Length: 117
Length: 115
Image 1: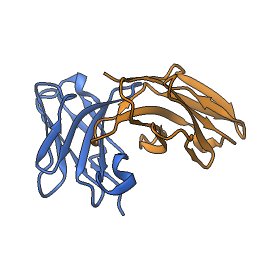
Image 2 (image 1 turned 120 degrees about the vertical axis):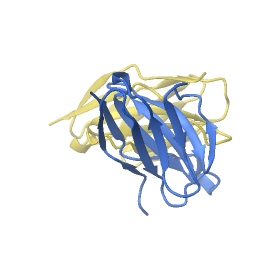
Image 3 (image 1 turned 90 degrees about the vertical axis):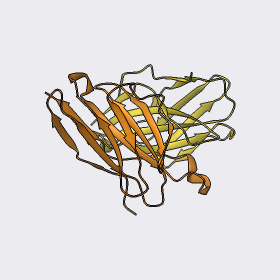
Image 4 (image 1 turned 30 degrees about the vertical axis):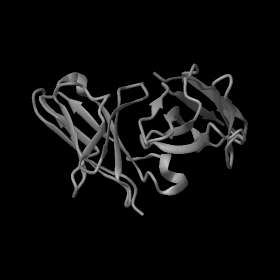
């Protein structure tokens, strides 16, 4: 069973460009979470999605950031008009929820490191 | 809002010795989950151990065990027989039960393992 797959591992963008980060959850998982990790800090929650629904976006910046988890395909975290302050590691996690004792465990991908020049 | 505090930015332990990493949290909920995650230099977040708040028994996973003190809102991680591969950042995390929801992380403790 493949783990949570994130790509790309590293992404370099110039200020003003768009960044698209992809996350494929573990097989059988229908819940996806995005977190951001600034240098020397812990992970901060951004958004929680189920297929075709945003459940909790309380950690998302109000502007330039959006997330989706379509019926088919990976979850996408999109950052428009990137600024240097967006440079961070972005982690995706997935969980099965409702499938017995494992339901509250989030399994993480290896992250995407975004560098904004 | 829930908060998680890790007061030890760095810790060091000799190989084969035991080390304890501290974590305290603040919540008004009575039922929740607590986690320790390990982040090696590869940046992959790896689940080390999980504790359910309604269980009084401390969780254990091989060389890793926790000391869960619910009244004190304390959740420390003990690593026995430390190995070089244990060197990493360790994050304590909290999650409300009920619905699968967001994890709240502490700021981490960097563990060095020396020969």
